[in-house]
Length: 242
Length: 55
Image (cartoon, rainbow over all chains, first blue to last red; front, top):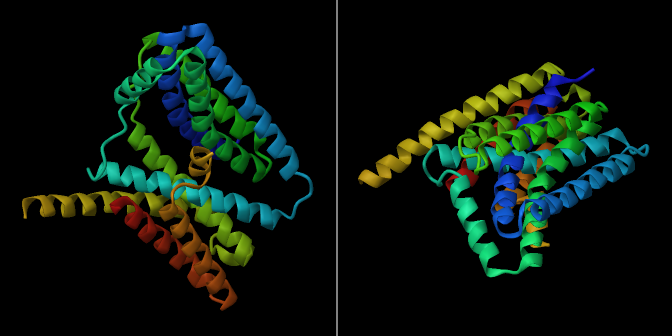
């Protein structure tokens, strides 16, 4: 039975990362061919799958649940706050939106300077680094409540969706609303991180409404983030006209 | 290696924000202010997010 509160954030997080990885692999494939670029991507995915299995096995070896919750919560906070802040900055116009076409052109330029092996490594490293964040989320959600199937299913479904869309358009996936997804996922993951760290430090009684507090936290960060976008946009506009 | 660490932990600003949040959680719980922490910590996280966004 899938836990949709895990599947959805895992799917959305993974989708954003896989889109970026696809852009890199596509750019490299134009230089060393589809087969070699896909091979590099597959090698990175196999490494990520092995990392997920090993971490899951090691962390599941009877460790105290509070320490696990604390460690996972801290990582989710690090990750969630970063994404939420980035999405707010982009939404407010303080930072340029992520452009897959620009990323594609940059990778093409990088590949043009190197040989076959260097290009292969660019694809491998690109997928590995983008996939690291997917790994973090899959492990974090998988460990809490033993929702391994749901978190892995979310990440794999995102991978299949991105590959299918990529094969159809055969170009960087520019129309994915990356910033909106980053904003929503940032709010959700920050909510999970806050919930787990305080529960680990202060005990189960720390949250007045138990698990329902998670929903409240996600709404708080989403609405707070939107308010920040408006506030920071107004400030930057006022600063520009001064 | 630095790209790997940055992907896992983020930049120094992100680490600082989370370290302050964790210190505040521990301090509030140690001073028996667990109920206040449930309201204060999310606000602190949002302030940290605003600071990171403005940098």
